[in-house]
Length: 127
Image 1 (cartoon, rainbow, N blue to C red):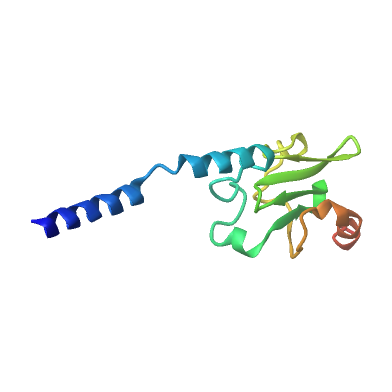
Image 2: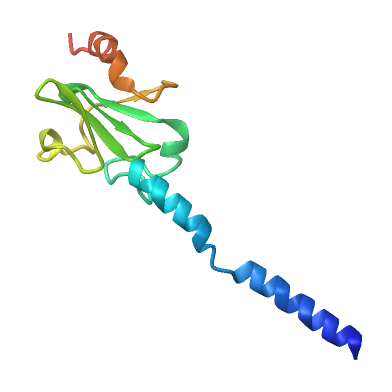
C-alpha cells in the first residue's frame, strides 16, 4: 500500500511540474518584451515560405531604401532624415506589392543594417 501511495504521489508531482503555470517566468519575458520588439508568428506575407528566417536576417528593399529584420519582425526605414524602427509596415511601403518588389537578402551579422546604408545604396544601386 505504501508503494502505491508513493508512486501516486510521485506521478502527481511530475504531472504538476509538467503542467505548472510558469507565470513568474512569463512575467520576466513580458517585461522584456516591452523594451524589445514583438516577434511575428511567421514570415511576413511577402516572404518565401520555407526556411526564410533561418537563411536571412535582413532584407533590403533596394527601390525604397529600407530594411526588414526577420529576427525582430520589424522594418527599418528613413523618415525625415532619421532611421525609424516599426513592427508595422511603413507608409512608404503600404502601396507597394512586396511580393514582387526587388529584395536583397543581406548576409550581415549586425544589429543595425542602417549603419551600412551608404554601402548598400552604392552596391545595390540600379545603375
